[in-house]
Amino acid sequence: MGSQPHTLPTPVTAAGREGLEALLRKPRRTVIALDFDGTLADIVPDPEQARAHPGAVPAIAALAPRVGSVAVITGRPAGVAVRYGGFAGVPGLEHLVVLGHYGAERWDAVSGTVHAPAPHPGVAAARAELPGFLESIGAWRGTWIEEKGQAVAVHTRRASDPQAAFEALREPLAALANRHGLILEPGRAVLELRPPGMDKGVALAEYVREVDAEAVLYAGDDLGDLAAFAAVEKLRSDGVPGLLVCSGAEVPELAERADLVLPGPESVAAFLSALAEATDGV
Image 1 (cartoon, rainbow, N blue to C red):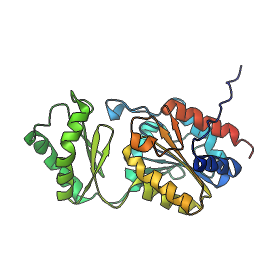
Image 2: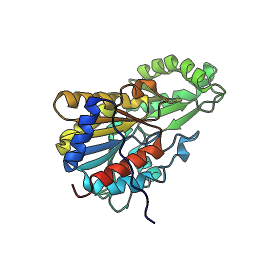
Image 3: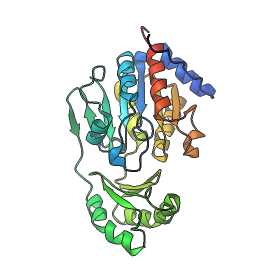
Image 4: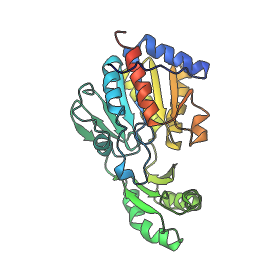
């Protein structure tokens, strides 16, 4: 027997319903933009063990040929997201784009190559200072440093009280970032020091302009996705319908602005499958 058809949930806002209607009416003029961790992949204690949910890639591969474009926008390096997502060489994803480091890097499935800027010198300086810095403020237990090439991150998920460690580190790391010409990007039990000038909102807005989309969907789960939500809201004000999807409700600031809140990556994959079915033949 074949699998049961997926049902499309209804957005709770009028703007979201308009965005979904526009997507279904003209899918080949729509951009589908997706965060990776927490949206396509479950959050795990060790980010190096994160992988796309088993249903995510098949769902994207089914949807991609039926819409204008699919882009993954992530804070991870683009090449890492491609590996952990298993996106390379998948039938249906021949035109997938992965915008890594919040859009500073780009991987195109067409060429299979990553285009990246030269690393910001402040990242190397901050990375060198971090171990001693964390020890000097008594925050080395339960925290660990992730090297990300274009950025460096401090994780608190393994601390005895992850949220308390996160709050205790937020201001000191913001000062360290500022000293090296960087900005601090908070996330779920992680604080990332990265260069200024690029965020998911900038990346999304530039990509929507590049492909001349007439509708956009963005799905994310964390504070770093707020900028992308704001970009969609700006596009709406400019007459481009959009749908905002939040994966999980762990970040109230994001969930409260979403048109549609889904429980997590498994539900996001099911939603993308439902979109593929609804746009079949349109």
